[in-house]
Amino acid sequence: MTWKVLMVEDEPFVRRTLINQIRWRELGFELAGEAEDGNEAMAFIRSKQPDLVISDIMMPGMNGLELLRQAKLVSDAKFVMLTCVNEFEYARQALEYGASGYLLKLSANEQALGQMLEKIDRELSQEADRKQRHRHMQMNSYTEKLWSYIEDLVEDSTLAPPDVPVDFPRFAAVLSVLGDQTETPEALESEDADWLKHSSCGQVSFIGWSDDADALSPAGLDLRFCPLAFPVEGLHEAWLRSLYALNPEWYGRTDGRAASSVGETRYPWRTERELIRALEFTEWDRGRALLEELWRELEANDILFVHVVQTAERLDRTFARLLGRPASMESHSIQKFPRHRELLVRLKYKLENDIRTAVLRQEAVTDRDDINTIIAYIHRNLRENITLKSMAKLVNIDENYLSALFPKKTGETLINYVQKCRVEKAKKLLLETDLSLTDIYEQVGFVNENYFFRIFKRWTGETPGKFRKRDK
Image (cartoon, rainbow, N blue to C red; front, side):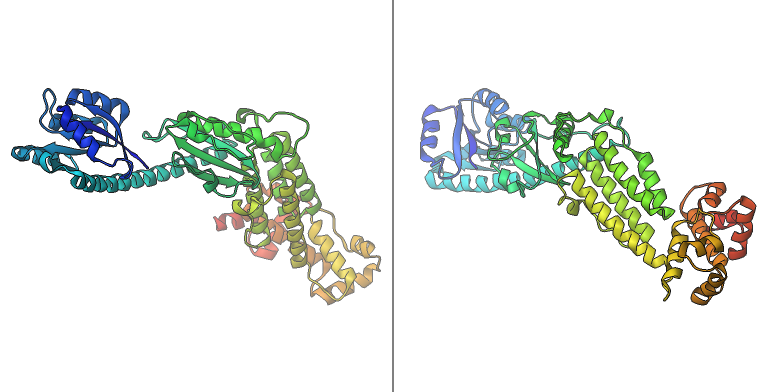
């Protein structure tokens, strides 16, 4: 990086001699301007913001010390003071005011000037690195807050975006691409712009910030949406626009219909709740159908892909809780599904595996296929009127024969087995839902509330109400 220098000296001959002695480019500097006094120098500092000021101390009007004092209020520029032998006390004051060093005019030869500039170059580079790290931390923190804001909009569209850090540069940019065309931020790096990558579910967003708007125009990327050079205060709006602009591709839409804005979307919470309840009640066929319905409603409502990711993660955690397995779908793995339907296929595959696991876990496998069929039916149809006669008809065997065979293979009568399954399901609903007792006894197949209370107490030793309160 090349540092800009302002030379301040009231004697033209001395100023020109100093300028000609320095190999500016070789040392990483360029002469950005000259000034004859402190007032002229101060105007230059305010408008051009040089990195280094080399200034004489004794000048008419505003002297070097006053220039240094005022400049520190509006600039981070380094100062090197030029002084004569009899002005040493002024040089000492300059160091107290924050000057990086001083040079005696009589000994300010090429070697001395070069050594001083090498020292200043190290200081400027170290400070630039610190500022860059601080800016990265600020941008990371800010974009994380923005991402959370975008995620939470599905539940509350009245949320306000996070405040912008006060020392951000004027310009920012959002670049959204679909899939894996660009895997790393390095593809967008330049010396004038820094980049942060945020990835999720088939889309990648690159956020850049710079005082130079032209630095935010990278070439060679297959960008589907690319708003550039706008005030950083509008970052949240531009990011949302870019995500909505990509929504049709995320859904694989070919009808040309534009995506809705955030205020117009409606998340299908009711369908998701019904899906979870169906799985809790082991209504597998209904659960499969509701998962398909949920995915259709997400697309119909133009739900942002980031919210679809949340849905997939939430459902996976629910499947895991119901089936007692670890949750396995996370945002970083969902990136492999660049389209809405592909993610649904993955969820359906996991759900089918979970259902098979649940059925095998629930079914007490015996050496009789007909008894296993009855057990599977009981677990899947607790709401139905399950009797010895209906089960005998289900497997096409004699009712009396089944009455003797079932206890022989399972260790308990058919009626006791059904009651036990219903009570276990009722216990689960009492502990894990806010359903009323009436809803629960109907869901698990008891004919009325009195019968439910009597059987539940027989198996657990307490009423359903006491059982629920005891767990809280």
